[in-house]
Image (cartoon, rainbow, N blue to C red):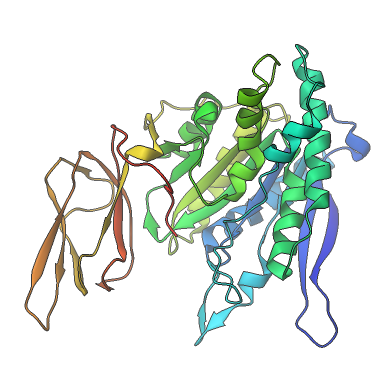
Length: 374
């Protein structure tokens, strides 16, 4: 194992941040050239991800010492030192940058546009050669990024380590949720074994979910370039997957250990670890388009009372929750417009108008535009 420290903000007289990165595998890329990048808690208050990273580190240290890491594995156990330092009246606040109000998992640089010009006339029928050329240009494009603030420096640092990886696993959690995954539509088959190993209850697919999140900054460029250079052989060479590790309060050793083991098994299936393989169990869910996910929102302020629990299936028109305003006496019942699985919800029990109540994974796409929560 090799430990790196990256300064994120080091101006005299101001708070300084540093990012710690762990690298596993043979030196100088002697392990076959494949690369996996794993980061935890880009939204810094999503603590379950960091505990999973702790178990991954312990396992990878042992495997590395035994020479059983193939290729390179990069682990960032706490991906957001800026967010980890943010408190509002004593409460951790790691989803948004307090300086700009921007979500830490939005506004990552999407390099496909500039690569279209730089790669013109250079790509052909050799997929391996195309992948090498695209990765080299992608690394250079990220290097040219000139961030305007400390959070931009953090985003550039993270993306520079992941942009050329074969596998990118971005570990998060929701407010209250079942374990679920987000990935690109082109990666559905590649992500299915991981969903099965983790026991995910939803595998949500989109080619462009909106807002430029981290996983799409790593993977979307491949299908964008494949569409643009239609005569060239360009595979979806980066399997970037966002893993939502249940809810914020699901910080348990047993969960973290089983999740870490599932991630290690996935890396073994992908040829990066020499460990006995475990066949993935039957998939607990079928992939569904992110456009088929219905978010319900509070129509007015009031007390939230759920009528359905996480993990229950909801029929179209069925009551999911009530919003009770104790001052006006008004009660509004929220109903699903389509059937599906109630897989995520808010932990708050008093809401203001417009706040999200829950998310239901359906089967029929009906939304467009920006598909992610703020």
